[in-house]
Length: 307
Image (cartoon, rainbow, N blue to C red):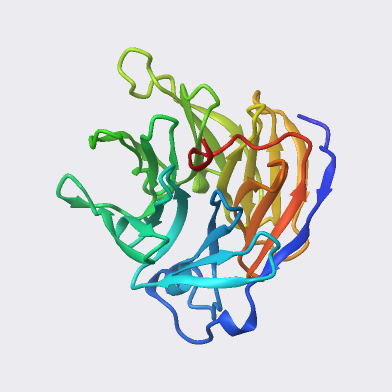
């Protein structure tokens, strides 16, 4: 349908040092998701704070890690009895965590105290929250994935408003995963991992609820599917394709612009823009426990934490 896009190579920005790799049996999430394979760390959820430190989560061992701006130093900010999967930073500096076991957690980076923020949808427990993103007005959008897929397309997209109201926007997604808002915030893009596609979810100007939801990008191949998602200042989407070792860069119209190849393993999980000009794409690769980087021409869309 399209010509093969140009290839962009990555380099290693940072590795989790041996001293922070854990050998042994981890949690139930890894037993199921990784088939019980030994997992020293499983990186996800990269996000930058205002000082240029990169936060990532380690799903396997319930840790939140912080990496220095030069990639040389990695420290454990907190380890707790949870399964952190996604992470975004609030404008006020609080770190919000999508936790598969506990719901939405919030971390105070100054005290390193982490506590529940949103544990239930009304009275029901969530299926297993995966990723999250803030709108410019402070509304928090997040995906509730659990073990959904084509066999059980009941994954959910939620919005928790800055005023404290929880809206269930969709409940029919086969494995909702990474998500971003369009530049004008009139639509949400959601990776449907088991459908191997990216959904576009327009929000009605009258009700704020979804309408005319469509399949925006259809991928193929890989041993997984689209995982994390990022957007740049031109509206281009960067899609982490786990199981293929690739990040795809698509235009705002869904046309392929570039293929960004992993220089390490196939488990490309998530990504975030950063660097001095916000033109560097940082990518978590979980087979090797590394953070990769690629230099791009268009800067990323500034996150809520930096607005």
